[in-house]
Length: 78
Image (cartoon, rainbow, N blue to C red; front, side):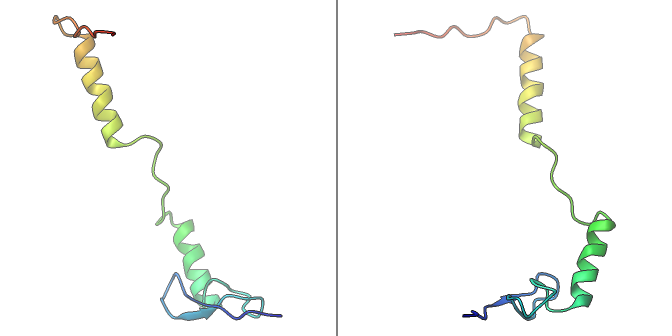
């Protein structure tokens, strides 16, 4: 039994069959598949670096505290 499922082509948005009859799945055509591969090769898609801007800000704040003349707050344990 073959289930024919249609998905949106990630490149152009047209409907594409997502099954073994479409050798370019999830893309609708060889052209869209090739364009997407080219975008990866040109580094148009990037995986974000580990760590975020917020982590860097926290790190800067920790460094400021370490260099401060003010002692850190004391925490009470109950």
